[in-house]
Image (cartoon, rainbow, N blue to C red; front, top):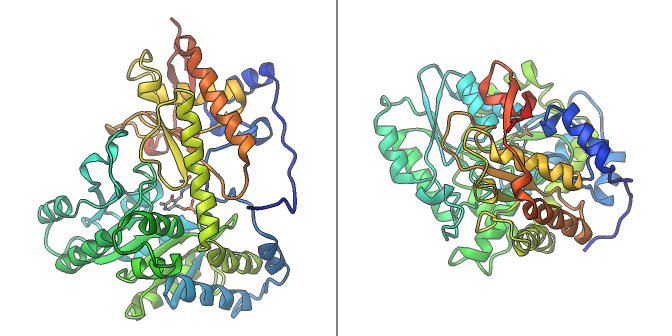
Length: 448
Ligand code: F0G
């Protein structure tokens, strides 16, 4: 549904170059030069294409230190689209998390979530809290049916909360879509149940709404009673129960950088506190680390993200990728989530033993075969959990076309045709913080 208004030259490096680039990167695709990547599915964050309206808004960005008009535009967009009038901007999502969780969480607290995203978990821990994940039972089952496998298991959450001291749960977090659980959506009913739980625990309800628009698309398609509502209505209805909403603008803000915390009208004191924290850590509270032009572009992007035709196209493309991969015999997590296809590497490479990182082996093989870059989200990224060996192929928004989808699926098809040639990997060097291992550790193929 788009024609190109600006283009970016890409090239498929030859096989020899791919082999040497991968070896030089220590078999970790985070170490590759982007110029050596043909199709980049590392993340959907900050990698999308802006519209001409967004570029036009950028030219009009107001770079005033205080009281920027671009901030006012962003404030108006957040009020119209998300329904929240209190806004504290931040340089990106994790900046917003630092502001909020640093204010809410104290030593010895526990925070409950449908599943903490990596940076969310890190900020809860940094503030002294214990992050507790309560996804629904089949969230990790790549074949289980389910309309809202991203939901919080509210009863499990209630049981876990009972084991924590009274008043020691400052926040219940619902991340929608649930990025750490295969990008699965969350229902409005579940958000409302989470609100009740938060009330019972005297906790705040925080929604991580990085992908608020994509989640709304699933509600319209799947949740009884919402098929005739507009995406805009669903977004506001879904976020309304929250005390605070965290957004990384790099996802459904359709921009390359930026984020914010939005707060309910009742949160006057918290708002003041976050403004002070913003001055300390992000920038004055009318820019929060963003350039005025970035705020101007996000104000437009937030509105564009709720266009139903855009979302049909966007999520349709992700589903198309899953179908094409499956047609090539690649096992994918079903149902497909909003922003990415998750490949089941454990099933794709059954001969690679546990402990030799089948997901990472698959990521490396796909790079060598077709210069496609995905990311491992299994035992390499999460050393001490029992997650399945998934590989995430995240599609940047409005960036790739059908030919790219074909190249990706043919690449994975070719990899699986010669799967027995793929060997496992072992770690050569890793950083001290295990939870950040997959960003910078180096590996080598296991000698057979
Ligand atoms: N919350 C969720 C659910 C996210 O997916 C991310 C980022 C963040 C918070 C942090 O936002 O990157 O702007 O600081 N997810 C990216 C990804 C990095 O690849 O999934 P950020």
